[in-house]
Length: 136
Image (cartoon, rainbow, N blue to C red; front, side, top):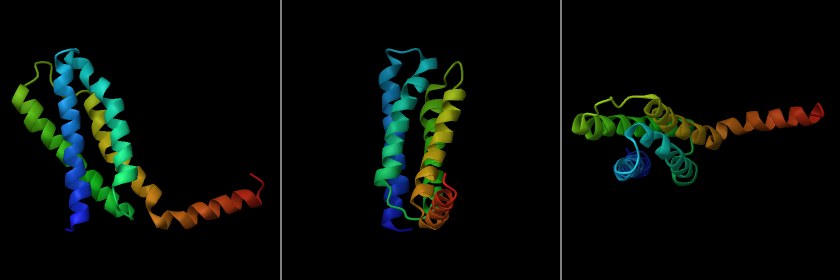
């Protein structure tokens, strides 16, 4: 495991989780608990997009898949230990907003990796060339 991967996977994964956790704790005093996740999701998504597309330094889809899986493990593990076990929410924790958050946590790095992976560029360029030839 190299330092770049540790930074991208563990470093950014922990940073993203802590940001969401801190926002949730701050909002807890002002917002019904059932809405906290829905309020955090747009901000968390924007930050995750920025990190995945601008800060993660991978060059293959495989690298981004591994980063996404580590981020997902950090999110699920951190939520379970520091929310489910620590606070024991009366109405439960795992609802649609949490599942959306988990899907986005994995999907965003996958999208960034697909975009950055050089193996896809020839296919994309051939499709553009074909479209130009067909007058599309």
